[in-house]
Image (tube, rainbow, N blue to C red; front, side):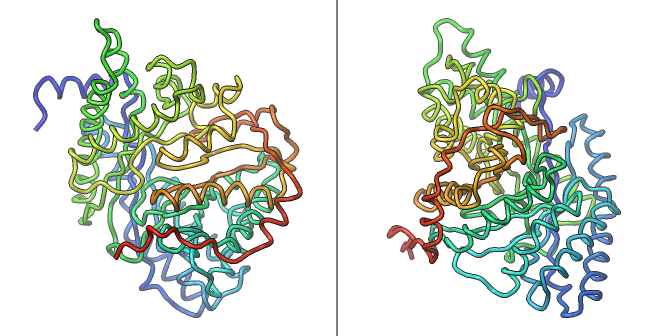
Length: 457
């Protein structure tokens, strides 16, 4: 139970420290919609989403108003569409993506996730058709998001899938060149993707999940920063161990807030509550930045020497505090470092403290990976695939989730700036070592075997 003092501190978080619930996501299984007739499948999917989610936005708004805590995004995550895609061509799956988009529009949600595939060990016919459909699907819809899992610690890295995703990213950027490649912001390549994640663009509903479920993603980097600032103002200054304790206590309170709202929404909709994802998800505004936390610890900026150690401390403390607050922690749960969505991280990249190589090192200890990274538009597909392969290796070897959300911005070069608007923010284009040798590497194909410590059973 929270003490009176902790309740007062939580109210202060709401007033001055940018505490919000970043996403409430309804997971919906579409496996009961299976059909080999596209019209029938489309009708069943539209009916199920509209029937289950017709009150989602209204209930989220009511609960947010009741507690005075903003719910920034309302979302839907569905079963991976590739599981339903076997009878269909890529062109037909683009039409299905438009059905998902229409359903999201009708119920008023911000995004619909799940236009994706799990191909860490190989492809089905539906998997290949879906990956082929991704560029057009993302270019021709507003709300649809896609994630493809190409690697796992159990199965290794499917390098054929990695090569296909490099090409898909390039084509998606080309088809949305009038929007600076914005379609790529809705596409994530994963290793060890969690089946219950509420955050986009990666969210989908795993095949072992309930038919319908509510998952919640909290935020709170501003809250953590303020707590560290207060601790650092004391004399004598706290040690790393004491600062870890401060972060744990803060993460506990933030997680409890998220779970209370998520459970109330689930109860109002007569659905089970799934998990609370306690990730620190930044927003492109002052005071709500993971990058600014590094400055509170005394570093010049994220990317400076010491950043990887500090991010490891932050990620660990957030997980420990959140796990104590809820018995149902899931998703990613840790610290996000999306370059364009975080003012502090974006500023560090612009100033030269943070390059792609250092960012990759940071992903070894954070909860996501190379997230919202804008790169030169002429970066080759094979180099993009090689970057993805490096990121997947970090996840596979370390038994953790990693991801790559890369945006090759058409017509832009390293050092140029790009603005996506809203929560996606703005970024400086990061330089990439783009060598033709990557083509020979990627063309080897096949599967990089799983590490020996995958044999745990």
